[in-house]
Amino acid sequence: NLLPREVQKGISSFLPLYDTPFWTRCIPPRDLGIQAATEPSRSSRTVTGWWPNMAQDVARYVKGCLVCAITSTPHHLPEGKLVPLPIPRQPWSHLGIDFTTDLPPSNGCTTIFVVVDQFSKACMLIPLHGLPTALEAAEALFQHLFRNFGLPEDIVSDQGPQFISRAWLGFFQLLGVS
Image (cartoon, rainbow, N blue to C red; front, side, top):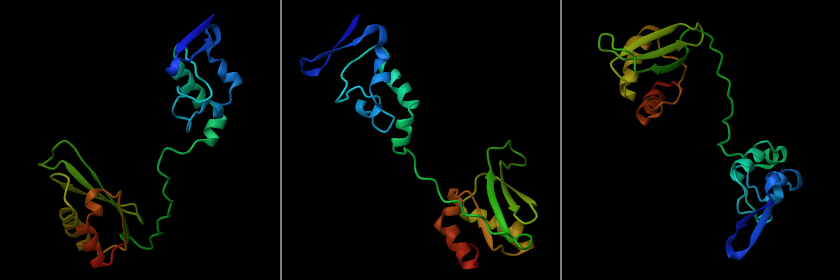
């Protein structure tokens, strides 16, 4: 009832065939050499053995292991700090902007430049022929919004390429818009 496995350097190890995941009850994860709760320990210093579906068994065990979850290092970028938006005191002083793209053509336009006033929640929709450059986006704001409501104090975007380009940032810095 033993399942042999050939190991490098001529060493063989055996695990009980009828109870291959025995290690889940008798070997702590740290002794398996499980690294950061992600990589199955197939070449562990402590345990040298094999059974069918070993990688899946180890991965399932590590995924459900509280010790592994607590001691593992994060595998993602740290979250950004939440910064509350300023409370607007008047209409059109604080704006949220974004694009809705890939729409069915209407009069040749396939993109909508969405501008939302954070004070009144009023929405201005500016039709465009495609995704604009930074200069085209700034021109659209001037023609359709700033001309009627003046310059805002603050504009919030999703940091798309149009909104983080040097031209866009320099342009609005000259105007005093953050």
